[in-house]
Image (cartoon, rainbow, N blue to C red):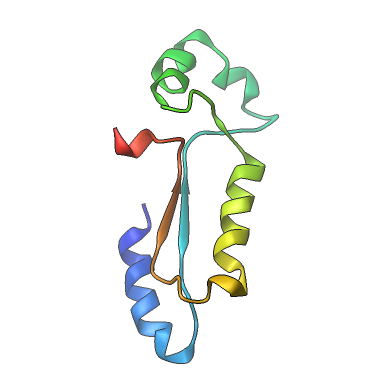
Length: 90
C-alpha cells in the first residue's frame, strides 16, 4: 500500500495547498483478466473472500479518484482510499 508515502507527501506539500491522496483497489476486473478472475480457483481464493462478493470495475476505481480530486473535498489529504469491497476490514 501507499499509505505511508501518501501521508509523508501530504504533510510536506500541505503548506503549498497541494493535496496528496492514494487509492488502493482490490482485484479489478478487465477484459484482459476476466477469464482468469472467473476461474474456480480465483473465485474461491479472491471473489468469495470479498464481503461484497464482487470484483471492482475500472469505473469503481475511477469514481474514487474523481471523488478525491474534486475541489469540493479540499480538506481531504493524506488519505489512502481503500476500494476493496470490504476485504481489508475482515
